[in-house]
Image 1: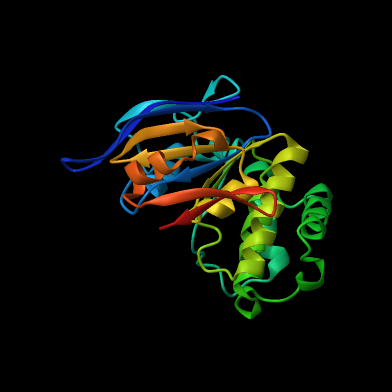
Image 2 (image 1 turned 90 degrees about the vertical axis):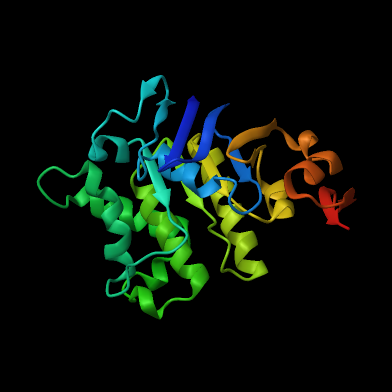
Length: 249
């Protein structure tokens, strides 16, 4: 469904990403992992062309994304940034912005209905008329995900969506994304630092090191050897609550 082929990116003469390639299927939730500076967030921004890669291609269902206009690309993929700049706007209006790539002459009844349904799906209906600055961090992240979902994307990109959330909201956020990924049969990519949170919810794991793909696969690739190579730490793999868990030494 989704193919990333030899994506490269540089800041001046400093190469950040080097021929990053991988594939993911419908309904897959993929974690992008690696230490600070590995190129994780840069990769996401290149996939949706916030940054323009120096080389490479991105295909969704066989269609090349990078040559598309921003509006056309927004109908195929949605990006949820780590931080948002929306404050003086109601929850309903902020989420409704997600329909903009699909609008022709203005807001339709269908747009309004889809917005209401999406707010219900993420549990934000009671907050629809509240302003963004009145919400908690977890609620704001739900607003951003709801807006992205209203774009009806085939690929959902999330940059550290749990970084400022407490454990309860982290679990709710990742559980919500996994549920939507499976229900809609879309592909979801998340940049995340918490390896155990990724193991709990994600299907596949992409480890970046020095701007390159170091390892990619299912949970079986998460080993003490990989943890040592990627993060430089000693670790032990155990089973806790019936799930694979990494303990850092």
